[in-house]
Length: 435
DNA sequence: GATGGCCTAATTAGGACTTCCGGTGT
DNA sequence: CACACCGGAAGTCCTAATTAGGCCAT
Image 1 (cartoon, rainbow, N blue to C red):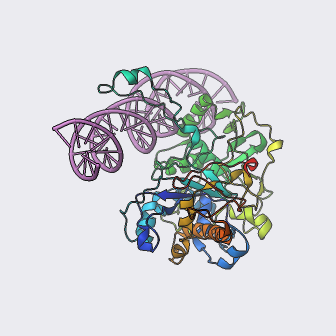
Image 2 (image 1 turned 135 degrees about the vertical axis):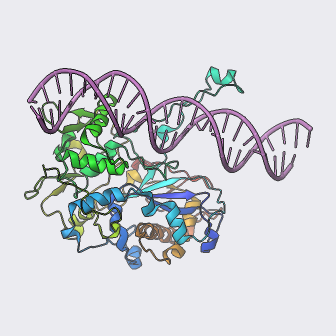
Image 3 (image 1 turned 90 degrees about the vertical axis):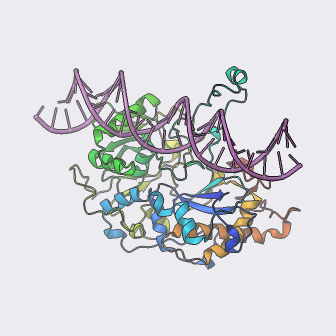
């Protein structure tokens, strides 16, 4: 099954010559970009079981690794960081590997779609960041030539109740905010509860069990070898001011998220996990070049809860707290909280996350079989996604009896797809009421 | 030649830390 | 004494927004 990993589909406008893949250069190239999330690691063992795609929409076979039981937490934690490396699945790498030539222009706006275990979650573009300045400031009207226009206020760090992904301008960057990083850790069984754990998941309270290790992981992620808890703690304290974190009084190393994603995965202590209070060197013996493909995804187990026996998680349990049970002090609306984390549910498509898919995207998807013929190599997530989308195409084709006049497939028959304006791929979060 | 559209490089502003520090509390 | 914790101040890094200039078509 497709795990909770999140993929970004880029309609790359200037990177890919799809014609060399035998597809129409008029259509946008679908590029899959890896998000800073460890769960994609499980895709290294891509299994082309296309027949199953025919049977179950969006279902992608899970990569099963027998190494999961023995995988060292440190390696996994390290891989958590390594997967953030743009080299692991960067657009550049993908292009170089599978796309013989770059440079031809595909004049489609860059757009991104997020696919999670819940299906296509929605636009990565962050509507809330769109400019709010519809009226030009007076100063701008005054000085056209000399002096710069007043800048639009740059979007601040999204707080946890806002969908956050790398946006289209940031695909090469490594901007995972600290609070996001902590949430990732809290949802990764390789690190939670070993290094960081929930103490009161419903209240968003967590503890840095091994503060130094967490700081080191953070430092590694930020390429700051000198990072320590003192420094990271300063960043955490800045979150107090910004309302992202609270300090839990009287408890050391305990912090509280002021709000949490609705579908946060809560990994709670098991009955055999030994928390590490010591300060072991988490980097010891772990190579930065460790093969990600050998690292099991922590999220696999989430899905395994229903599909197969859990391959690991000897003792820890994963609890998806019902949103209604939470007693967070979150001051913010939960309406926007959907995208940060993954769901533990098996349902790959949840209505509230269904996107609008453009005709261009769908046409591109129709060419995915050519992509699938390529060797996945170490970038299986791309092909997993290709398979995923390929199955969408097939379903699309099945409904082609009602193709519109422009040749765009009619997706109305698809419960998960809604056609946007042809030629301008727009990804609009679709609520269940929209269907 | 004038104009407008497009593209790109350079510049700039600002967010998110990072670093350092002095201090307090446990 | 070690460590956690606090918050001010200054700095760095990165990125988006903006501008300017070149090129080309009309």
